[in-house]
Length: 307
Image 1 (tube, rainbow, N blue to C red):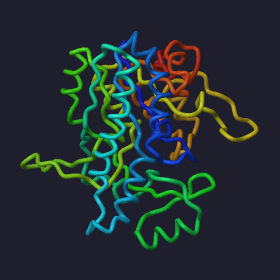
Image 2 (spheres, one colour):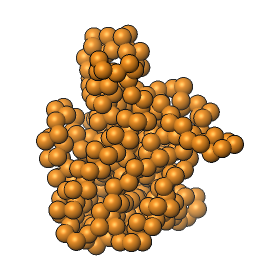
Image 3 (cartoon, one colour):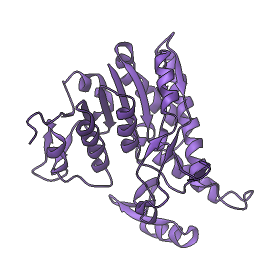
Image 4 (tube, one colour):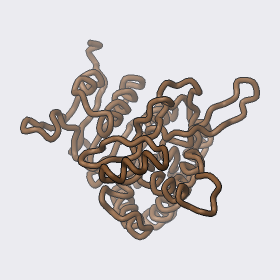
């Protein structure tokens, strides 16, 4: 079975952790343990978020006195793909002796006229107190938004139109490789209508929506969205909270999940299932094997009634 796995950025650097290399390595060790059993039995394509990492690099770039201007987000996104891809590739190499592992820098085409480019909504970087957030908004001209009890930077997040390296990923899978790609949703680019020349876009694409598009293009059998909770919950955080064990795309969309957290994951799973008739699931990283085998997580299944 061909499975596209979408790892949350917080699976690689969890909320509240110091962004040290050793901390991220320890978290990647946990990822490899969770995915190794699946990789023995199935063909895997692994995508990952980069919100914490790209926010860290953006802050370092903005405060580096050697630079005349901060590095643009598309280049920082490419840096996170290289860093996280290397961590995952090395760790999976040790967990899966003899398996070919390929980490690929990936670009994702977006529309230059996407209205989302004018509406920053994607959280990146660490959580700040309100006073620090206001100072960053003033001095760095960053857009800031509330995230739980704190504040984080938000950047534009256009919709993914096409992953430019899909054919290369297909070839790598055909050669028996486990492929790590589309990190952070892919480096966002636009293409010139006349020449096809690519230009980086100051944005970060939602990695779950890119994973759904990639899974569809690769004709995957299963989209596995891994996060830090075991299920999608209706009424999350309320006294009436209850897990959603399974749902059709329409049923999942009616739950009304928040845009800043579970909403994009649910939409990605719903979109993949609705477009392909295959299966998707959302659940906790450590239960990846159990989710694929129907023993954990929220299963998203086709609506066979047509209603």
